[in-house]
Length: 438
Image (cartoon, rainbow, N blue to C red; front, side):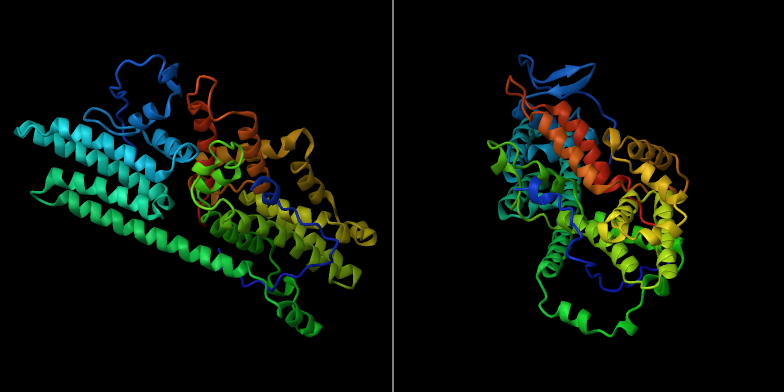
């Protein structure tokens, strides 16, 4: 695939072009051990169904997170609980509770015998593995001083389990270094995004005063629909790679007034989500602008057919988000009302694309195509075939309404873990697993 192109500045076609913001209204190493931890006798806490965890109190779920000598939680549980727990408890508070449980288990193993020392080292290795998965999957949980303090305290106590050769200390040091690098990179990205959010007073004047003859249209920059579709996919992948599963929790953080204050950070700062949403709008307006700026009908017809081919290539790649943005741009009123142009366009391909994106029956046709792409991704032999980029607006709305119709807690006060497991696995897929760089 070619290197990403430097697109010309996107300008609005007309003020009548509607934006489609969705956040302004919505936002205010796998271990095989499956042995259940010894939690003592509790009345229906946690609750299992067909061997699967359905619900439980926060305390029990935290205990299930912490490894023991004979147990280590599977990665699905670690991911789901750590992601959903922020609705009920601050990350630094959760770290403190994990630390307390670790201390109790460590004290039970500190008998001084050689056998117990070996068990203590094994226990320490499991705790390090848990912390490693936590810091790698949700590094932003450690952005504040309280969380870092709790992490250091746990690390200090675990280091004491293997003071002889210092292996544990080296591993923890590397883990901490990687965490700081991840936090620094994300902080820099947010600073850049914030700069782009700030209005530039003279930008419109520069574009307005630029001679018309020097402004190139998209065909003069890239005339191959496949290449442009690949370039759009590069942009999609770059932007989605900066969306983390915990970012998606911001969508529902306001829905439970009792637990709202538990979510991390400032819920108004949804940089990555907003940036990805704005990208959809910018691409739609770019399509409409490029079509409307062409004066001659024959050339305008060619431009329309070009974008139809680009949307089709996006569909073939599995880039449904860019495909939908292009179709949306072509359906904006400044383009849709060009009757004479459309009369010359071969619309058979466009009709097929619109059929895939038909909103009837809750976008049934699109969801069928998306499911087929996901199945192809699972059996793919190359990275190109693994790409699945869903329509972001629909993905967000699905998550929003799923949280809307379900409750975080059951009537008995236990956490509805089954619901969080179903939804958070999808969030994990959105955040990382179905998005592979070309």
